[in-house]
Length: 559
Image (cartoon, rainbow, N blue to C red; front, side, top):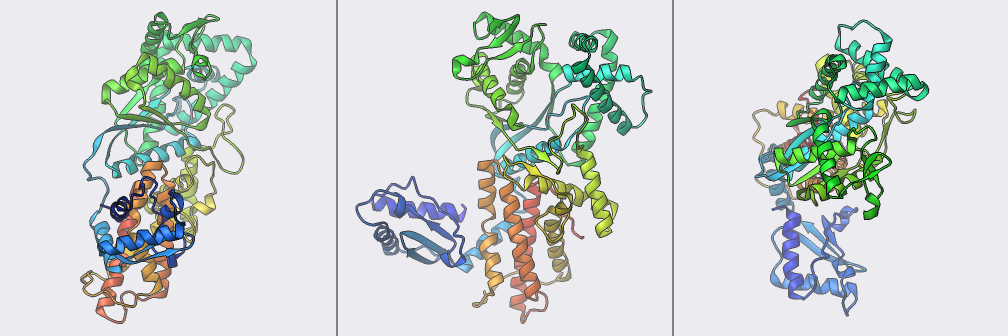
């Protein structure tokens, strides 16, 4: 049990004795060290006939009369009615020892079945910076949920049919270029083909008709076009797989629009008979206005299933494959209204999904030139960013190829995760590789520094026999930070917020580096002090490694 949970449990007993409702009991970490390790404002927010300050004293005195638990060093009341709690240093050490023992957060007994659907790239289009944030965010959320005792199914729904594919194939046929040998060149050709096809669709009526015909041919598996579709689709999937591998991401299942299109159409037609859907101007729509939403087309005027119809069949297939308790779709904010309607339609055609489908939104990503668009070709490619960061690292720090790759991936992931999930990310390459700033490489460097100290201390037993009564401020700061890690992981899981782990790790790294610069570790005054400082170093090392792992970032042993 985490110490915060134990405090809540013990304090609830006291509140119950005083007939005070404990439902509003909240524990927080005070901003000022002088105010202890935890604080609660329960006396300020519950209804009482006496003043909050007096009520807080009554709560504390009642707790004292029952005998304060051993983990508390001090408990005091501060006006206008806060109760501040300070933990015993010895107790903090036992908590940190538990953190050190827990090498990973993946061995918990898991609850059944949460699905996280993320990535969602479209074949025949290049992988841009927005996809990169989606991937990094989705993977981090999966790892954090696993740490919070959830069994996770990682799935990826990829768009391999639709108008975007037809535009690309039209452009490909009209570019009349020879097929390149390298995968990179093939993907660049698809990018140019898509831009050409999209421009033609918007400006040339004849081309628009040809593209729409191609779209029909793809859906009907027309022999005339299907070979080209399959070949170019295979290029895209190989390209995507290279990116997934580079980022250390492996999916449990890949879903494709082409696999669910026909079933989606059948579900809509069946729902039409039940009056769930209705005809409108030659198309079939879901009347979202009946539910306070907006109407959306599920089968277009040509009888083809839209994204909405395919999502119905996708949900049906996902529940058949995994029977998940919940499904979280990691998708941008522009799809908020879309998912509201699709989820409502799903409730009508597939009642088992009620209360189980969720849209996890995240903010846009840009460098400093604005939002990206593969429609016009003005797009920042994901692999370009990884390569550019890697190149800058090698130039700035003379890193080896293999180390630069690990650090570059860590730099990009951290920069994309180190924001509130809903916030826009403005990616700054120089900041992302700053070894002295709020960056992934800074955390990796701090971990490597810890490992260097521990390697030099090989043979020294890291244990605490007698705790020195006069700890330095920097040592106390580490003690009072390390034990909070499990709480932060729990909060990050509850809020789907990897940035909470980023914030914690950066704060911990700063405190350790201050401690490292001000105090000798291996040449401390006596063996007891050496062992204690090695203990702190070992704990910081393990927590940073665990935290980076939850973010999907490698922790190099040397830098």
